[in-house]
Each structure stands twice: as C-alpha cells, then as structure tokens.
Image 1: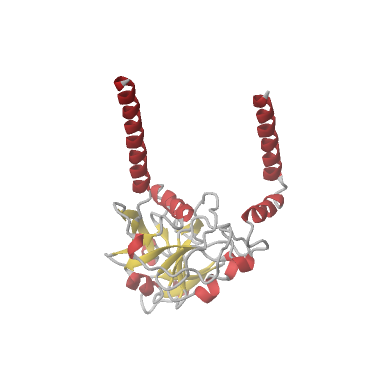
Image 2: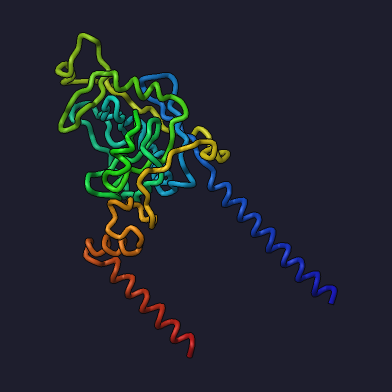
Length: 285
C-alpha cells in the first residue's frame, strides 16, 4: 500500500514539475523584444520596443525578415514630412530604379494600437486589409484619425524608445521621385538637386545597415503605455468594426474572404468535418 501511494505521489510530482517547466518555457518565449535599426545617417541606432504579446503575428513576421537579413543594405524609400518615414521594401543595386525586395506571404492585420507619434506600423496595399509583408513605417505625428480608420486599420507593432531624432532628420533631406516612388530621401550637397542624381551612389541613400535584436531577455513592453486604437475590432479578426461587414462574427468574415478565393478553403473544411463525423460513427460501433 505504501509503495503504491509513493509511486502515485511520485508520478503526480513529476507531472507537476513538467507543467511548471512548460509554463516557464512559455513565459520565456513570450518575452518582449527590443530591436535596433542602424542607418547610414547616424552612428547611433534607432531602438524599437516590439509588442510581442499583443501583436504576435506581426512581430513574428518582422523578426523572420530580421533573422533572414532581409533588411540589411535596404534603403529608406519614402519620407513624408510631418507624416511618416517608410522602409523595408527596396534596395539600390547600382542604378535606377530601386529594386523591390522579394517578400514573404502577407500577415494577418492586428489593429490593436493607435498610429500615434513614435510608433512603427506595417505598410500594406490599398483596399487590402491583410496585405502587409515586409514594409513598415514610423509615424512622425499622431496619425490615428487617418491610419486607425483606413483600410481596416494599420497594425502598430512597436514603439520607438530612442533615436526618434534620427528618423525626423531623414525628412530634412532632399526628397526625390523615381519610377513611381515619391519622396525618396537623398543625401546630397546643398548645391545639388534631384536632377543631379541620374547616376547616384550608395552614399546618396539612407541605407539600413542592419536590423538586429538589442534585448529580448525580459518582458519590456509592459513598461510602455501604448494608446489603444480608437477603432475597436470586436471579433478579433484583424478588421476594425467600421470596415467589417460582420463585426461580431470572425468566422463569418473569414468565410466571406475564403469564398472570394473560389471557396477552396471552405470546401476543404466541409470535407474535414465529414471525415471527423464518419470517424466518430465508426468509433461508436
């Protein structure tokens, strides 16, 4: 009897230890991340605290590009004074036009936070809510009345904690246009104009020399006080209520989106449900 109780208690204790260990592992993987973005414009880097726990898919997407070295030697391709500074999507390969970087699949929209000054958010295609890939932008001012409401809301996934002056200095450069890209910040002498940039060099661009992880050892996003978006996403489907035909039914919205692609996912779901039902009937016999 004593041996049986001891064995049982031992198994229970080991189970509890396993659960505790798993919980600690999960806690570690949920740590917030601070990244640094080093540009050719300054010896200092821009440090950004990512919202790992509240915009997880967007942060994962960004870190995937970071780990692949995707942003290394890319260029800032758009600056709009008193609005945004944008990068992540183009590189200079020695001649015009800028070369678009190959992107991964789009990531789901996560419109949790507001596009206020000092935040970083994902860029995306017009009229396409879930189309963000590799491009991102810094908000130079409070753009919430515009970007929180437009195109399902733009996902803010981090906050600048140092180096905002570097970002603002980018907008002070001469802004040029090439092949449909407007507002390309160019480093040139005061006597030069965009017309003199027919054969620019790498030194004429704001180059992102690297993007790396500065600190991911502890949860740091809890120390920040980001503003929530003014436009709620009640069903958590990545589309703000005012842009969602079914604001209280995430499954309904997803079903509509699937049907627009020919309904293949919807049919697959029906087949899988049928297989599960059949399996249940067989097991009951």
